[in-house]
Amino acid sequence: MPEMKIRVEEIEFIIKMKKLEYSNCEIARKLGVSEGAIRYRVKRQLAGKKDGRKDKASALDRYYALLKQWEEDYSDEYHRPAMKTLFECLKRDYGYRGSYDAFRRYLRKRCPAFHGKVLRMRIETPPGALAFVDWKEDVPVQMGGWGRWVKVQALCMSLGFSRKPVVRFCEKRDLASFIHGHQEGFRALGGLPEMVRLSEEAICDTGVYLSDRVRGWAVEVARRQVALYHDIVARQSL
Image (cartoon, rainbow, N blue to C red; front, side):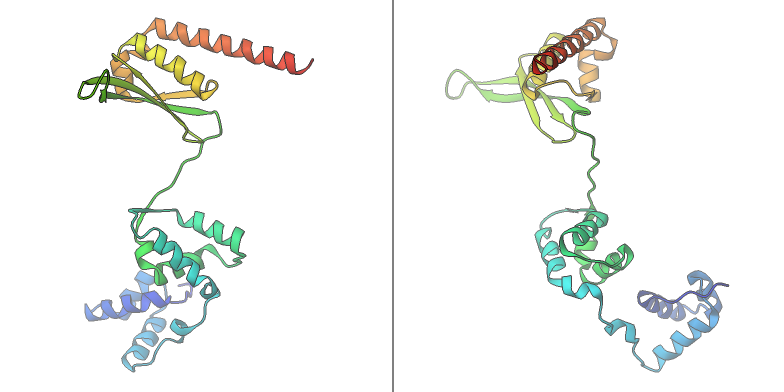
């Protein structure tokens, strides 16, 4: 069996397993260490001797105030950034030279409330590669005077990289409104993304993938966009 060191946080686990009447050999197999290592740790624990590693200084102690500030900043949030993101920030902006595993263990021990939050990870796409489209139905707006409420449909677009939003309102959720909303949205965004991802609701409401009219419209828009691009390049080269 390969010799492996018992981590500080595993000592409590060993004691709990002994209280459940597990043998030293059974605990050793679970932790991947020798039976002698388990026996040694149990003997020290029963003798009341402290593990000196608990009081050993860490290279991350100098960043403790910063880590606690991060914990406070997200105290009211349900999510937290990915550990890897925080680790890269600590290396890049504050000169930390330790390992990621050491950082993760330290944060789990010293900032347990922060470590226990749900991870939020943002999936990046290149600029101009992706846009999201969805309907927001029956939005109440006041038009024509006080208390005169009507319901309109909103075609919502957002870019995948910058998250820039564009909203275009229309009376109905039909194919004509779908096409017109896209034209106005692309005009507001300043161009066409490489890919447009539609929600299931937008597909069902407009039948976009089943419509030859939409397919023809998209081809025509792309053709005009390419022609406009070549025209701009020709003018800049003069």
